Each structure stands twice: as structure tokens, then as C-alpha cells.
Image 1 (cartoon, rainbow, N blue to C red):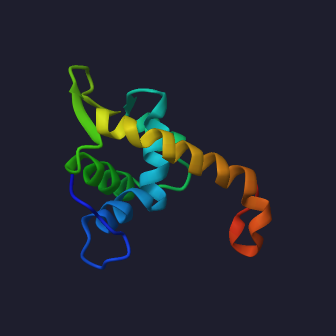
Image 2 (cartoon, helix red, strand yellow):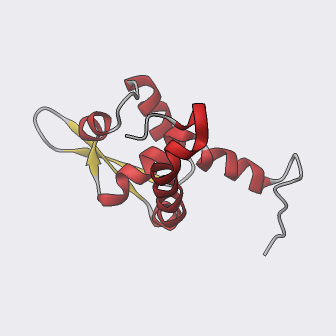
Length: 116
């Protein structure tokens, strides 16, 4: 197994960290943790995300094998997203981070949000 060091500028581990540690990636992975979600349900569940940002985030996660997209044979046509096995392995750390953020939002001062 290759040895990686996130302190090195060109390390693949740092690229991976940048991919999975941005706000929308964390929220989308956490949102898909309950199981497959239609695009519209996921969008409605995630307050403040635009269609464009959700689409970009889902495409980024899909291209990195964390999320898979499935066209639904429904009328009107729909799309469903689910975590891959690799994405499911990220759910544990993301869930811990999300819960920590919820518990400590009020403790972080001005940048901590409204606590809700």
C-alpha cells in the first residue's frame, strides 16, 4: 500500500481530503446515508443548496466513485442517487463530523451558525 502524507502539496491524500471535506460533499453524503434519494427529495432536504451546486456536487462525487446515479423508469422521468460501497465507507467519518458540528455550532463564535 502506498504511503501518503496530507502535508505534501502534491499528495493524492490531500486531493482526496479536499474532495470529501467541502461543506456540500459532507452534507450530500450525510443526506444519502439513509438510503437512495431522488434528486428532488435530496434538494428539498438540503436547505440553501442551489440546483447548480447540488448537480455539481453529485457529479463530483459520482466521478470519484462515492455516489452512483440511476435513471428511474417513471413518468415523469426521475433520477435516484445512492452511496457506493466506497461512499458508505465515508459515511461514518462524515456522520461524526456532522454531529460534532450540530453539537458545537453555538460554541464556535461568529462563524458557528445559529445553532439550528
